[in-house]
Length: 578
Image 1: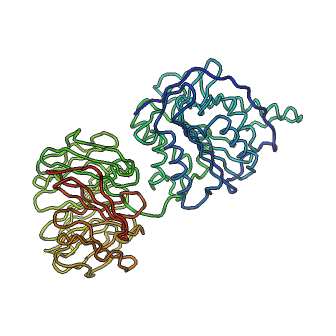
Image 2: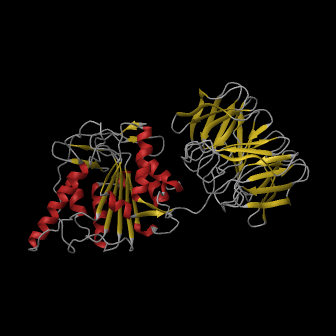
Image 3: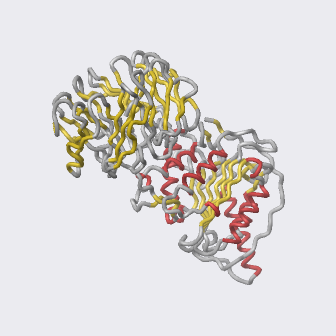
């Protein structure tokens, strides 16, 4: 991570005069139009040093928080994104003016800004591409909005907050950006009322709320792709449990609460802040997505599967993010060792795969978080010889459970992270079956699924809903089940890989249609590793070649194929398979 450096000088440009559009009152419900201005600046034409995440922040908030809203509240025509040289102070202020004059009661305006930030001897400021954007200038621009229109400002800059500090933390610095903005705003509005011969209302600014990445005297940290706070905001948009009141709508406050907590866990010196939290709680950012699509082997939580290989002899890992084009791990730590196999699991509910290994001889589990760089479970014993781990969330709490399938008798043993038993000695079948991880009915709860290797029949039951499918034929001898949701409908499909030919055969149980009938990718010397490697919501065909460590991919209609330009793995390394 890298801190944004503050620059202690200012151009000292004069503030624009404000105007009064309508008498101030409590903001109306945001039932009207929504507009957004998103600014991200990595490169500057004056003193600030370069950054590497701010343009990603602006684009990520636009694409994930706004345009990916299932309710379609945010229309692309009403969104303006300014990055680097386009994000001059003049352009930012011009677009704020345009939002203000076009907003009426019931509308919502969002201003997101990611850049350097700092203070001079006379003001605090955000950094635009070419100049400082001072607290007084932002206040003048906010004074242009009608009181009945809501305005939400999200700032991921150093020294952006300052509304409060938690107990036990050092006193605030003298300069407090948001407080200075709102103090100047109230002065401007009071003068407007005075010129009209009216008394200023006591609730001036009730329609304005801020979310800031840090306090007034703190740095706001960047990470590998997004800035730390903004990355957590974006990730929160894909986590149903962030919607704490379970109304299927993320409020701005719910997203901030999650991002603030995750940011503090990663960087104990960064306290994200809010101003006017009641307005943030009452204002919907976006809807919760209905899809239950699970992304396998997503170690960085970016919504796409990663290429991951494990050396059981040495306990070394090699992991690469294809979506972001970067290495996440390359033999730089040891987790596991002889007798351990890697599993795809998420035991802390952050929608990032954990480094989970299981010893097939002793039944020992070890769980660590690559995303948090933390050990979650140093050692725990559950299982042993003849028991196969089957990754999954079997009670719908968004946390993986410890699940084992006993060969050859077909008994299931499933225990939650709190020690509660979900299944103990439950058997639906017998010998000759292979357990398959997946949620085949799309209810957000993984099912007990078994594939009979010799007959090619599937037997699937839900712990909560009973039998889903029993004895359905799809497959045959010489085919291996490969779990995945290949059509993006939120349900696991009946998927098979034929090692002898490298052909894939996939059918949708939900729609009772064939998705793939003999698409070739792989062969005798390859291991199937399906996953959603491009983050489009559908699992892709993928294989790993142990002899070379190379990975090969193909989309579902078979029209496009690709491979990694460099190996992730090699002799002695095995891929992580869900």
